[in-house]
Length: 221
Image (cartoon, rainbow, N blue to C red):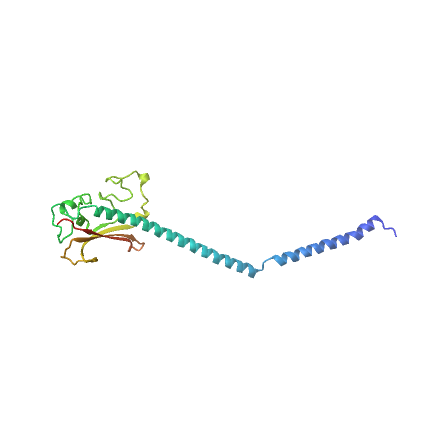
């Protein structure tokens, strides 16, 4: 039987429409199969939050560790600098008694208010610098090593140095056990030089970072 062209078109169109509808349904089924439910989305968000918190804690711990390392490195440098300054002096002032009971600088050495006239070890007993200063009283990090102040562009940041405190103590020690300080009024041919550097916390309390102890001997006999 012969079919007119317009009748052929009418027969073909429904088939095409059906085919397109089937494709759309397949596509919707695929999207539904690969999509996320609300529960799955909440679980994914929870896992991401936990992982992010762990990463942030790790970063914070790393920053704290780095800060502690920087603090200790600077404190060690300050402690060694003062220890070298003390032990580089004479055991006792020229002509003075090496067994003097009271360890303290003379009034003339204290007249300047600095350490520039300290020439023997006992002058440094009970030194306490807050903030840390050089022999001329200039704050470390700003000094030029000669009693002056360096160019402002070469000064150290004050955030850490302002929190540091440096102390020194001199004691006679037992000649048979250098770890034992002698009681007040007792002397020997050996002295212990102890230098400490402390860090001031936000609550105002001090935490010891570095402690150095060195034994010096009296060779003047």
